[in-house]
Amino acid sequence: MTHPLLLALEPLVADLSRDLPDEERYRRLLRSLRQLLPCDAVALLKLQGDVLVPLSVEGLSPDTLGRRFRLGEHPRLDIIMQNREPTRFSTDCELPDPYDGLVDGLHGQLQVHDCLGCPLFVQDQLWGLITLDSLDAARFGSVDLGNLQAFASLAAATVMASERIDLLARRFEDQRQLAEIYKRAAGSRGPRELIGQSTMHRRLQQEIQLVGNSPLSVLITGETGVGKELVAEAIHLQSPRAHKPLISLNCAALPELLVESELFGHVKGAFSGAISGRSGKFELADGGTIFLDEVGELPLAVQAKLLRVLQSGQIQRVGSDLEHRVDVRIIAATNRDLVEEVRAGRFRADLYHRLSVYPLLVPPLRERGRDVLLLAGYFLEENRVRMGLRGLRMSPEAQKLLLGYSWPGNVRELEHLISRAVLKALSRHRERPRILTIEPQALGLNEEVQPGAKTASPTAHALPATKPSAGLKEAVDGFQTQLINDALSRHQGKWADVARELNLDRANLSRLAKRLGIR
Image 1: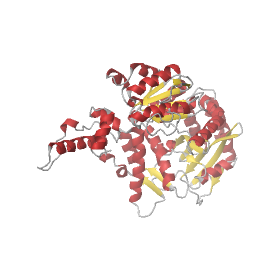
Image 2: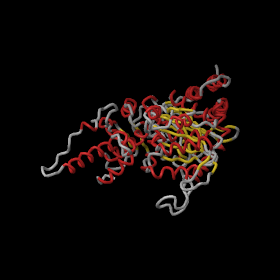
Image 3: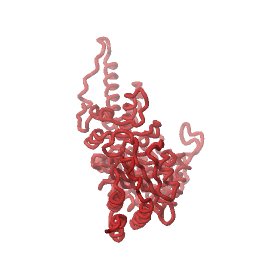
Image 4: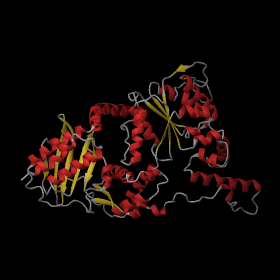
């Protein structure tokens, strides 16, 4: 009779010579493990810096793949990582379990259960771990831990067989050093992660890797909230300029008169208030990358000067006759249709062609399928830590609601929605629960304005009611105030979008808003 260990290892050995996608290779690995050691939940997690990232799970909620388990916050995972041999926790262990509320079909906390974990070493370096959980408290009592360790050794070989995992392993130290560079430049924040497993998301990551290694200018397009800035960061990290700074500028967040100074710098006395000279974003980004968010909002005069930098690499500070040469890669982003803006004369055609050498479209969240659950898991874990909760989960009904929603605000809307839902769910408890569950009513999606809902056009507004004694000027001022406030509400305070809707020059709109006391 064939030994159970050999039955479990045989398909893994056969897979070593096969060209399999990572997801399928890991799924087969966990399936073989459950054949060897039947259990209710199993997970493969990879160590990245000080965070354990789930690569594949079975028997756990889908949003587990989007969670990130930071060492020091999960004592059971810490203990498994510290031992070279498999670790089994006693059934009366009081340590919190990272999977509380995440085991399929279990809505409450993991009470008495059997928990087992084993670290994975690749070329004698700690790579990650495998965890097993059973709701039967005696499931692993008679398990031969030597068999599990033998399985772990072959699992490590499976990991090495994957070309992409091998590439990640070789670049691990580089990524750590890059994280340190980012921490020094931006406090404690390291490079942010693009999360997803959908076909659309994988295609985007392939394009990022392709264009990252090139010197081409990139124009990132997509709806508001899809994560264009994160895509720009990922492109920079894939480039040979990754050890140099990535400097960002939101072109829509600055008054028109200051945009040129922010981009190219100015000398002392160049304009009122310029009491000293300063470097612009291009000089700060020399040798690295500059990210111009909302590039479609740049005034035409500044567009011409930006084009000159792209053509010659020469910049000139405001108020100076001297030129400086800079070596900067440009990544731009916009949620506007720049082709239409070119036709309308609001954006230079020559600049558009210079920026869009490699156009990159970021897909909206509604086209990414179950990625919404992974992203929800990521934001749930962030909120769990922020709110000091032991466990935070989302009910199956709430997950279905997320999958059925069309996300007009994309990932940013999801992030804010999860934060609000956690607060709403907490408000329904007098005492802080051991595991907080997000139910559909806490999401409040039925209260959200659905995409495609018609909003009244500016000309459809009725004049506000005025006193009989009010003159024409007061009535007109009241009407203009109402129009501007309504447009601000629709465009979430973005003055450039308001100016475009009302067909006004942005500077004229700013002066009018100040006169009316709105700004």
